[in-house]
Image (tube, rainbow, N blue to C red; front, side):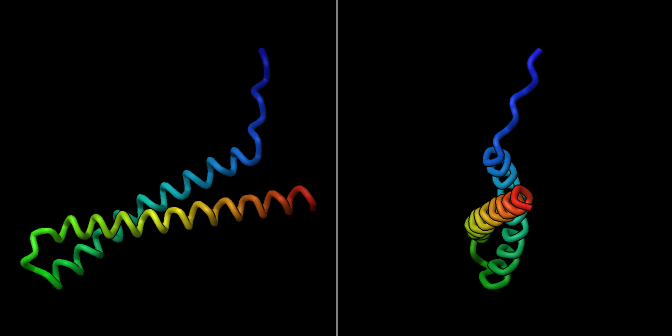
Length: 87
């Protein structure tokens, strides 16, 4: 039986950063949608589209925060990998 091939460092970095970005993005969508809904319902109590507006705003914020988290995670992972290889 063959031993499994080693995963390339860039592939591991990509997988970790995508998973971190997705998890933080989904968490951010839930939290920011709640806060946006509270704001919209207090400012516009008669509007029937408060929930839709809150979810839309939450998704936009979640995508942005998730993307920033993914890039930051990849940068930290690559930085520590570079320091470990040289040091």
